[in-house]
Image (cartoon, rainbow, N blue to C red; front, side, top):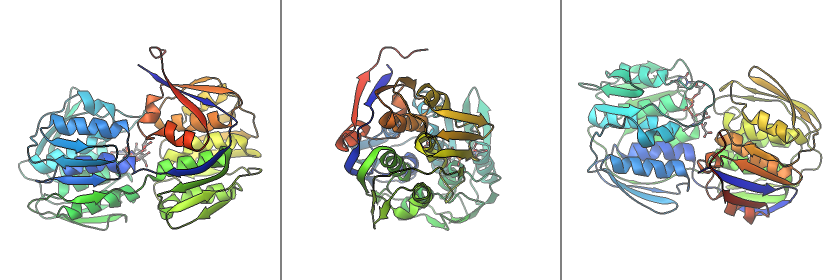
Length: 423
Ligand code: EPZ
């Protein structure tokens, strides 16, 4: 059943919103916990469907998970190398982390090719390059990846593309390998540091996470531990954009300001008043928004995950801004939906010109992927009248308690469990 989110626009947001743990950390930490031989406790998890799906997958593997909204106790001691050719693994992109975790633990794995947001081609060739360098044979049979290795030996691996997923997946496969692994041209996202912190607390030996060279010394085994996850910089950035679009004083707490430098700088360039505190931000009411140009890059560049909600905000700026996505050239499915609301754009290749200042009107729109859904929420808050967002389950994959949080800020938003989704 497709869920629908309905937003009545024009309300000013104010008050405080608390950010949850990072989705793109959580979906790697849960597979990483599989590598331990005793209980791993994760605190501060987001309450989102991707995390629930991973709990189910841990159960399918024979593990057990005791969890509530923001905490999970994962017992991996009974886990076996159950093949996962399809089913739940198809529901999210990050199921590919099960390849690295199961290969690292059992020296073999069968995992169906991942699902998740369609942002254009999303190959996993760099993940496979890393697994093969460590000594694994990898084949793709009927849409599932088969991995097996007599032994995993440390290797020097140069990533041809800066890839978050490949960096983390190779770490997962290398921590129990024999000898030293060096990952060069590694991604530097904060979530990678978070996963390395968990693995080191489990007894691994990883140095350099967060830089472009990560050194791993393989160890014999890994034990359980307790870990609190970092806040979600993309959820925080999304609320910053919503507050810039329709806020009259919004406090965003449980953030790491360093992780938000790109979005903070861009919003200040647009004329949004922002006070930065130790673990919170205050977004003042933005009078006349100035247009800005945006180019996404791997961290610490401007996050591609915030490009889509920014295209909605830029419809309210004076003048036209150019948004270029250098990471996913095809990540503009939100544009057609924003045009239905009155937005004016000119797209060519990996760039789109956003013409402001344009009045938006609520109508029926469809969330094509998670952050396109975020863009439609920003537009819905701005638009005159009612915006109905179809396929809203995309949004629920990455924004926990979204209705409760936005209602708490004064938005008029509610959920309708929809008719069967329109084809
Ligand atoms: C992670 O995806 C995030 N997902 C994405 O967030 C995020 O947009 C992306 O990193 C970039 O920051 C998770 O962490 C679960 P990549 P990932 O490998 O790891 C190319 C969201 O909205 N590439 O860093 O899949 C790839 O095509 C999601 O929360 C290869 O060519 O991204 C892309 O152009 C969407 N070969 C670039 O690298 C590979 O083997 C970066 O991709 C792998 C990637």
